[in-house]
Image 1 (cartoon, rainbow, N blue to C red):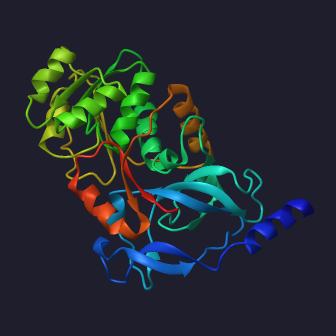
Image 2 (image 1 turned 90 degrees about the vertical axis):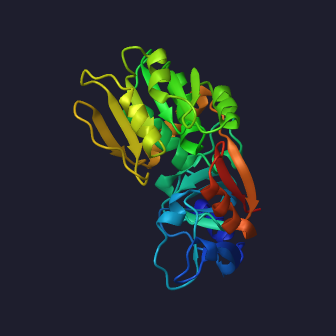
Image 3 (image 1 turned 135 degrees about the vertical axis):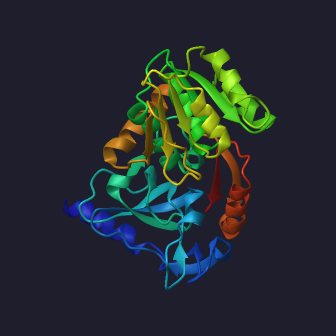
Length: 323
């Protein structure tokens, strides 16, 4: 234990006092996101300090900005290497490649509770791991825990080219589910086919209900809704009507779908802890999941990354490169 404490102390003593981070100003919106010099966080007991290589860009970061009194670093998930360990953390080693959720990852260092950190799964790069956490948990839990998809069932994934959808397609196919994916352009269609979707339709130009009935004449078993609006309502119209049809849709999506009789409709959000991250890693490795990075931006261009996200039509998730 004394040797471990000595290693931890050496790691902490070698850290710089300040770092670069992309932060919002007090009273500012997402357009105020800019580069600041801020203190390097010191890991508290139970925390892991990560030297961040890259961070994922989430749409919720713009929607749910905190009220701050000082420049505040954003970034909900990211990946890098362990720089130091807080007291009581024994599951990780300094220098180990990890990813996590719940930290302030738009910075050179992020201190994260150890139960929100996992080793990078085999076959996944650090860059890919930086966009995996929240999207991967949302996709896997939506398929397995909320919709409880079984082999040979039929599923519409609405918004399949995005960060959650592209992973959900792969997890569903791993479970031997038949997948109809909706997209909004031909580039997205080609991308989702590569992810493994059985049928792909353009929700803007094709009749979703008609195409879905060709795919599943008695109605599809389930819908995973990752984008709101009229197209999602049409996806729900294509469900089976015997009381066993089910819909899962993500927290924060707007507008929310209209409740329906005899259809199970569940609003859900991802759950993150040590067990769930381990389950995600197992699924990613077993399914040989591709983790698509839609675009890359420098840390100083974090506001531009958010602006690009707001324009949509992405294949996968945007990453911000830290170092």
